[in-house]
Length: 353
Image (cartoon, rainbow, N blue to C red):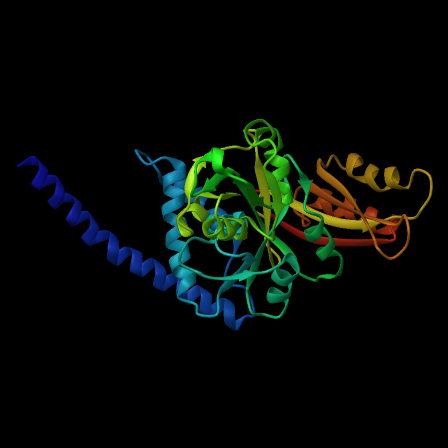
């Protein structure tokens, strides 16, 4: 039969693939050992991007780009998992959106360390209990995550990569919608679902908790309660999806940062993040930014935060196109350093997505 013949063909292909996968992982493990001896991190976002670009160029179909990259993500995740000391800290608990972003970046095979707060993620990486951390930095609707910005002021950790996650908010419960008396979630999520909640659950009490996962935990055990959480949380805590995709905007994207101790090499398609403070005088901010214009460098984001050291004293966080080793970027940063009170380069990393 043709069916049996095709299945035999698949078996023969698998017989060739598995030894090659093991050879690849052995070679990857050798590289990890060399990096460890040299005091370098085993995870290289720049090399990862190079691998994705190469396998994409080899691909003749029918696999699409996303499917192929997902396969290679898990291959690389399996390689990293062989290193017992490799752990990734993230803003937990399990099934939060930061957990989903971590899985998207590092795959399912590595060891994860859920943390109670953003500060704890930084602390675990600084102490060496985790090699990398994943933290939220901004949402396309609600804006910047101020706690993450504030942590960079005093931390020596570097930004190594970014993750963009399409965020889908789901109303989860184990009771009908008209029986819901309370809804649990975090403040940012309530903000992103404000119109839907006003229209569909008017008068229902909204209660803020520490995470969307904590919200799901409470909803799973409390009568007539619901949470706004991820589909992963619905699966973990055995909640029914009462209404999917209740976010007010279909363009709801959260950006996460991967933080670590090592610099990342240029890929040709990079972003650099910096923070600086300025003197309190007329035109000071303009003077800081004009060097980027003169060097034809695009600024993709600028955000201010109180320094908390003096009233009306601010730090400015800026994202710009290009790697810090790029001559034009380097020149602009050198000019900025001579003009501002304080400059800190948070990291250069692949844009990737």
